[in-house]
Length: 451
Ligand code: HEM
Image 1 (tube, rainbow, N blue to C red):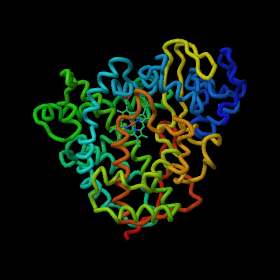
Image 2 (image 1 turned 30 degrees about the vertical axis):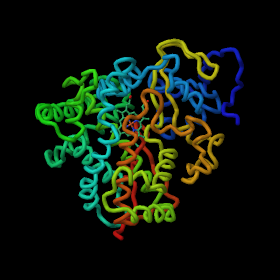
Image 3 (image 1 turned 180 degrees about the horizontal axis):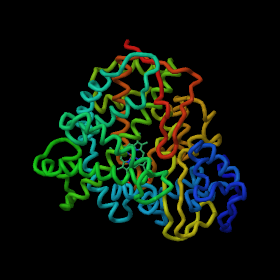
Image 4 (image 1 turned 30 degrees about the horizontal axis):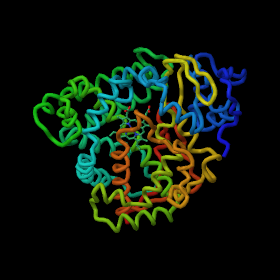
């Protein structure tokens, strides 16, 4: 199978120059084209430049890495040429500073080892038990009507779940405070596409600086109590976990990790769940198939039982393929390196185009089509390349919350499948805002009815 449109010559080639028509706007570069349709832009880059494609973006020339082999080289990072901190830092650094994803090298390794203790199978089982009441409370309030905007409802729900599991109970905080926290997260995430990258009033970055302060104040106000008493929520776990060598997090570490974790957990799960609601609404046969499996389980399944929802698992994989919540991963090279035969100099900004691999004709049968069976063992299209499907990234930065996120998405769907039925116009295409993580600007309407 041929995966790269360029020849695999032995000698190392220089990075291709940006073609005249691909320079985009002064300062912005091709940011508009990316925001309009990232998949089309990546396809253009692949067809015109190959797997290592220069890309003018917000004042710098980035390099897109496209296709599973180039993605693998960056994420496995065998020669330690790629780092996260300076790359993500440039996009959202002041707002998610020292979150796990922005750390590198031995420091990242140490923090990840400590944090891993909060994501053991036993702890996940406990988190799943805590999720059910929050989900039941949340969806009980959903209106049964046509044109129900599921995206904002899901966003509120996943933030409430995060408040319960991460903070130890949404009831400690008022709805008004949670709304403020939610708005603050949105500002921080939206900062990624800010053109003015400084603390200037009335800009995305200006808003995000203020919002980061809101999040810090919110978390710091709980910190002393969390340090004092041990409870099962993630905040308390982060305050108390210790590796066998006695390593633990400082107060600043706990706050920085909490800000990042809450953002990482609720945005990505919301996108995944809303994509699934759309797809199951457009494919009633799959909705019924998933419902039958959920009805065969009790109302509050355990983590192991959620794992057994086979059809929902196929649907979730397909949703993550079609709309990866994190379509592109940022990296910076710290030394000269070679990817797919092309030299990339030290100091280059790199965009790892995970979403593109998910839609390649070379890897998937009819890639635009919703076809969850492609992940079934008999077909296993995702096995055609280790990085054909990589919505959770790979290598040392691979998502630490992937099992948590999967369980959360399945638990929400499980409750919905047992109590509601919904439909979506088969011709509906979600109008996505791609400035940061992709979300539907119309709130994603579904026709929702109680069973
Ligand atoms: C469907 C849901 C999710 C998706 C698609 C997703 C996706 C990703 C991706 C692609 C990365 C790698 C970033 C990179 O390499 O630059 C990542 C990292 C990370 N994710 Fe997730 N994520 C999800 C849910 C979660 C949840 C629920 C949590 C926390 C409870 C979480 C916490 C993290 C953390 C802490 C990292 C950084 C890991 C590291 O750098 O070592 N994610 N996620």
